[in-house]
Image (cartoon, rainbow, N blue to C red; front, side, top):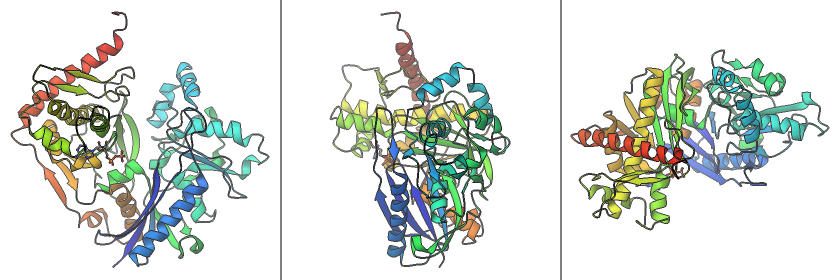
Length: 495
Ligand code: ADP
């Protein structure tokens, strides 16, 4: 039996999985990751801790598996950026995490200067502190300058490049197109670093990693780190790795992760879609790990709405109770909850919106509110997917799902009914790490192709049923509720 080691470097922890050729996970390891908040809006990670934790998790997984993997696949928190000294191997500062907002003013200035259009055209993104470019610019201005380290000794990269560089003892400085597409420095038409954007952010080309195919060769991890030398053969950002791990390789295939928030990606194939309304264009992988386009959007509050009903209002003790409560009602009886607790994301895009409950009557109960919170996840997903279809022309054939709230069978059935499209939930839900394992294992020949990689996977399939009419009707009511939430946010003069 052949095996692959998947390294999953996330925002709150570094995890490792040993995956067997038959799809079984035979070893696991993990390490928590400290979060630093040195100033309001600043979020940092210790890059040395990221590397040490990843190595420790990998050793743990290999020991538990008791096997020798053949290749490493890396998946990682995206956009987070590290600047380091090639001579010493030391970062010049902590990693600036994707959540870090210190460059908000810079991004506002870029928008005011009319740069948004050019940035969007080149990268598929919108100027936002979330992406790496303005963070790297900040590091160069505030940490490189005056450090005494000459510019030609510096290297920069997202977490995948940092891990590759450390594992190969500095032999390889590389990234893959999925990670590059989140830096706001990568031209997704030319598939190359964008010269105009490098100039705009004053980033020397030599600072950045070489961009190599996601399923390919990224050097060899030196034996001292994991106890054996292993080739690194797969790399992808976490959301794109999950899309690949879900088997969404073709145009029209999409996945949604239902966690605290929801993360949606739709593969649109080789044709670049337009995006807009909070929907970004990004690079994902086809069945061979080659680049294709994808649309990406997030819903800020998904499972968190259930959390709020539990912790804020005390309407239920545990999130899984929501399933029985929703089932207890034959319909929502006109009650809708728009959980815009932190504003409305795609496609309505109204940052000033706030949570809105409409349709209450004397007969409304806690079951109505809980059901409305679950329905909101399904309607919000339908809205985003419809906007994505509009932007790409790609049909939607199936929605593959993962994340904590997908254990709710009622929600999954309701989601299928709202969409009128089957919803598939895999037996192994660690789709992100599996995706990295797949990309590496295909390059290393552990699996001859992507189909073989997923051959052993089973899905629970929720097909649209007679509930379709009720659910589609509900979608109309939901959209009216969203309009109410938006108009409440915008109608400030009526006070
Ligand atoms: P994250 O990775 O974002 O922390 P998870 O994937 O662990 O999130 O999912 C946790 C979220 O899913 C929580 O917000 C919780 O309220 C919600 N959740 C968990 N189980 C259920 C369930 N059975 N029904 C509905 N929501 C659930």
